[in-house]
Image (tube, rainbow, N blue to C red):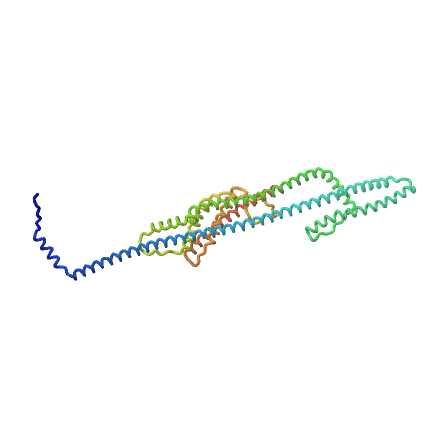
Length: 439
């Protein structure tokens, strides 16, 4: 094999020698300084990036904590509203229970007075019948004595004895008649004294009393037939009273059922709201998932590196509650008001004495009444929710709350006017019916 030789160009060797001869110690020192500066700049950039990342993570945590505080405040407001509504329903049930007990007491007192009156009437009727029987016997004796006077018999000791006995019997009959007159008319005078204080004592002669007794005797002939009619009427009255009591019980039970239905509807609405609430309100087992979700949401919201000013969570919760109540008022009004105001209400039958100028309560005895009461109940619940919101000097919350309260009160005023008109309509129709019955 032949040997291989490499030739190197002389110009390249000369350049390398020149370059190695140009760098000195100062140049190497400057190079070291430049490298140190570059390293310092890179370290500062790394620290800056780490600080920015730390600040970004801190902002994310701050956003998550802020959302958590807002959620907790919203949940606290929901609990306050629920407690206020429960207290309202408890008070309402207690008032209805008291009214029902008072109504039952009045009904029982009315039945007792009626029974006592019927017993007194029966007692006096029996006394009059007994006295009339005695009077019939006395009249027979008087007629026999008058016949004996018209057809006199020969005077004898026996006839003289009979005349004396007849005189004595006449005096006895007169005494008995006077006692009977006193007994009968004392009762009449007592009734007149109760009606008017200026009652005067009445007197009656024997002839007038005989006429009175004859009329009573004629009335007694038809009294037996009237007694059967009275008993039937009494049974009918008792059935009516029982029906009234049963209707009162049904009304009270129906009101309770209506309240339970409204409470069930309210619980269903709250369950729907709870479904819309965050995970914290639904369960406490998934705290880590909640934190992760809040941090992820804060990552999505982190679009700029500027500091974000957070509002007061209490104010945000109040504004959220006001917006929610405003929306509920609109929905309730659109759903019920037009339909209710174009309908009719029914009221229980009330006597002319017990009839009031305005209706105190409205029983849930018909579908229209139930819808009316439910609509009124929903407005009252929204007013109770507004009562739990305090402005605390915030003008925005105060003005918005004032507007919503005015709107709810106007809705209730409209319902009261409609109920008053329906009450007047039913009262006028019932009065006309009573007048036709009287004629």
